[in-house]
Image 1 (cartoon, rainbow, N blue to C red):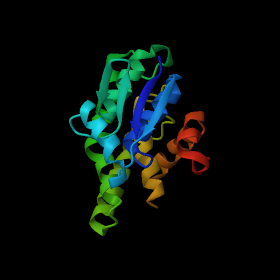
Image 2: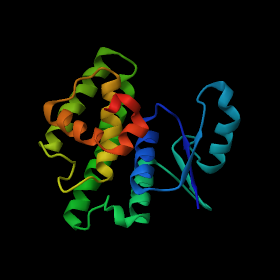
Image 3: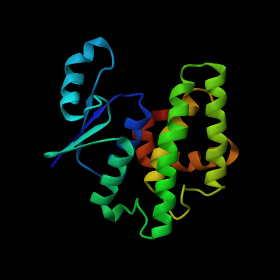
Image 4: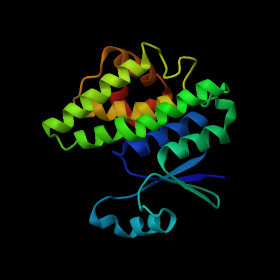
Length: 193
């Protein structure tokens, strides 16, 4: 059964879910939701599924799920053969830490940096420094292979790149590794090469 992802092109949260759909090999359809006044009808249909009336919103049969990192976890568990969530309890705890940090610090700081105010950009640069420290020179967020943390963090790192923010060396090396994944080219295009 095909899942539907209600989606906006420049949204880092939508992009990370799109990456996950590609990584797990799901049969999916992207339903673009226009954020301008012209998209009001489609946004109203999203509101019927998601009380926040925001994207991403995933529809899998009769099941509707919103909040990007929850969707990542759902897809990783639905497709366990992809091993995007580690089996080890301590590694899962570290994964959750990275997902929570991305959704409360890194992601919002990148969104605010789009406002191009010096203070906002400084906040984003600080979050990127922390990202570099968290990655610690590993080729993936957890070190044992890609996980949904890489997808979540990667969408924010790509937005930082689009905004012209420089990634610390450890984060830049990690992002180069992620950009070699086929899913990256499909979501981020040639820029990800």
